[in-house]
Image (cartoon, rainbow, N blue to C red):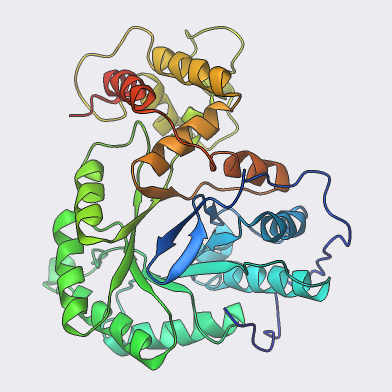
Length: 380
């Protein structure tokens, strides 16, 4: 999108610098491996920014590397920012402003390689946001924070399910008003494409039909999806989106880190760290442990080796293809017709993520991975 005059403040006032030289590690995308989201042509692997804040000095190098390597598809949201500020309702737009500053400084450092960055952001449903106008107003604020003439992809972050006054009978859904707001943003030229997040197959079909009546195509639906995360309606949602021509953006494509090969359950093969040594929060660690014990999809008999056999199969395929375990996991998502949106906080992580593009798993490898994954997650 076209850069507009910069916002007055970025992050918390820190000065970011983009290296004039190319970073030591650059993304290698094995040629331009792209796909489409609505009218956009984007890399087959995106970059999640939910963990970004201005205490991460390597973000400048990451953005520069992404631009140079053709992997600059950033997914953010108005609610993304430092946890404390967001919890107090003071951090809205923090990461949007941070991305704008990083992209602006990359442009100041020299000619920005083609293609330019694509940035997707999100509207957050809230109890006081009940009209189409609330979507349009929020979109205008996001557009200004991002410093662009229009937003590449504007998404609703989740269905309207947060109802703190439900016990008083105030539980009316405002989803259709939000869809009307997306349509208004589209027709005003504030956004080029619209999408949703965390919509199941029924709701995404309703939204698709509602927007179509207003002449607006639904470009995307962002859901949690991974090799071990195909249960709880995820696969059905992906299938419905593929049927409708709605691109799925997959967050948690590495199952919160389990599919990077970094973690194993404590009784798995030696050489990989135990989940108990993870620096993640207690809640995150509990989710990881449930996956590692084979409970990712709920119920059933847990395989004696937990996720060990799955990780062994992934390591075997990775070794044969000279790829990392994480790249195998991300490529699986690509093969299923979705765009994985793994997080990255430095250029090295970005490089590894983008190494999942430019090649495809064979049908036989996919069958093998799904067979082992189904034993772990009890996917049906």
